[in-house]
Image 1 (cartoon, rainbow, N blue to C red):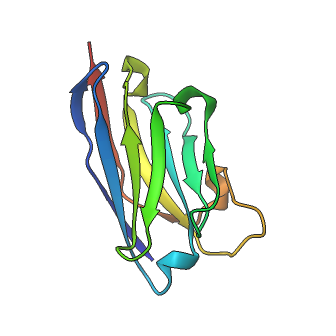
Image 2: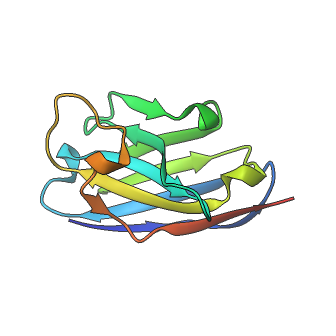
Amino acid sequence: VQLQASGGGLVQAGGSLRLSCSVSGRAFSSYDMGWFRQATGKERETVATIRWSGSSRYYADFVKGRFTISRDNAKSTVYLQMNSLKLEDTAVYYCAADADGRLIMPTRAFEYAYWGQGTQVTVSS
C-alpha cells in the first residue's frame, strides 16, 4: 500500500486548503483512512479519520467545524478540506491507511500501518 499526500502550502490565517491523499493498493475501499499532523517539536496527533464506507467520521476537537474529511473510493483518494485555518494548524500533515478491517474505526496513529510522506501546511498571519 502506497500513499501520496499533496495539497499543502502557505496560506494566510482564515484561508482554506484541500489536502489529497492518493492510495495505491488492492482494496482502497476496504481501508479506514486518517489524517494526522505533527508540528515542530510536538508529537503526532490525529486530525480526522473516516471509515472505509464513509459512514463514520472522527474529528479532533481542535478542528471540529473547520475541517472535513471525505473520500472517493472510485478514485482511491481521501481528502481533507481545511477552512478557517489558524496559525496553530501549521504542521506537516500525513495521511494513513488501516487495512486490518477493524470492527471499530481506528482513531489513533499507532493503529495505522501505512503512511504517506507528509505535506507541509504553513499558516501565516
